[in-house]
Image (cartoon, rainbow, N blue to C red; front, top):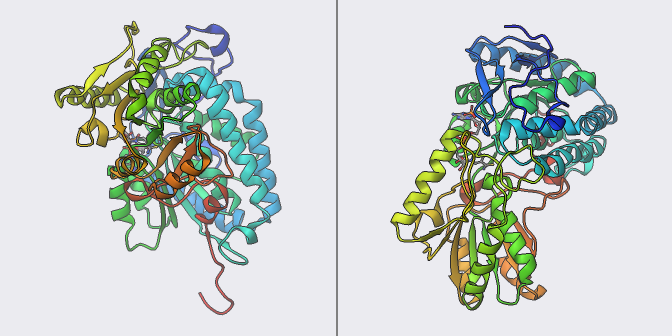
Length: 489
Ligand code: TAP
């Protein structure tokens, strides 16, 4: 395999945006500061909007995982754990600034590889990813205040496995706090979206980050499994499905590895009859159609007060009819491509089950492109709490609508899910918002807004949505242990 830098792109519907990209035809594993071939069989990453290949990606087998963990351990022992917090902070600031400099290129690569609209990657994913590095850069020399007692210590080597819905942003959520706290990292991106993680590896080279402090290994689920099972890993951080999260929790049990899990969700967006309706309609739309609904904290269940149900549904349908589904690189696109054929299949299956179980299905009349993976924005009314579409995470542009009469009924229905990640409350009364929020079992609750993120704000779930928090001081504490007392181990 060659790793020469040649301009390469099969996909060119919006030439002014793709001209920014100078992608390589093949990407290696990023280990110990260099790209190198993997021992597994390389795989292609494709554009989900066209099904065309973007690049070939190396695959890491167990031996490569071992090399990457050994590189991270060396870098931890010899360099990163010995560096002052203020010097680590300087590297993080440098990485953040380089991400800003290469923001447009990263945004195009993200939309190409993931399928999300360019306006979202440009205005949300990439700026937030840089913001995470800026935020944690500021913490690097202030760890005594990070919430785990005086003189906290790093954990060592962190194994991080991330999903395909926010590839660069999830990378930032994982790597920035780990490095600020003094850990070194081996990260595995999702198989369908490795591209921006590999461009990020180039940024690390530009930033002169010491070799081995961050290693990025690509491959399938088995690569992730080998990584989290590696005996020389001290911390595991995973975001993805609840099924894989469970397997990881089992394999980590009894090993002494510290674990954080950010898993699925089935967020309730609760709309009371005194809600600011215009804003609520926009919040419901962005709550479930942002990023094609590939969002763990999506407001995928609308709980609407019975007295305003018909008005809300009419207005939602009118607004959904204005959504443009299509080319992710077109700035006018609202809803892009579904990330993979497998995910499209899952969304179709759950939607078909919704109809079979008696819910009423509606989508606006919109033409979908011939090639690629697409699903029209869809709303289900007449949904009851026992329906699969009210219980299972669809992870697609599908909204299930339930009704309630009283706040107590809204709370009971919102909490009637195995998940506990997010919720939204729409009401004119602050006292009602606070009273309802107090009784919701959700890690993140938005009031009269939805899907807003900030690096200073902790994010994470209850119940089957996982444990541990990312973001803020809490996110840093997940990468720290209180320092051992003198004379003890
Ligand atoms: P997962 O299989 O959980 O994938 C997430 C990450 O874990 C990927 O990097 C994946 O690698 C890796 N992985 C897979 N099997 C693993 C194992 N045994 N040990 C360690 N790592 C492993 O998610 P998915 O299959 O892409 O999506 C399935 C469903 O999960 C979705 O429909 C959605 O409901 C949910 N999901 C939730 C989230 C969030 S943010 N909560 C994110 C993604 C998906 P590969 O990509 O190479 O398989």
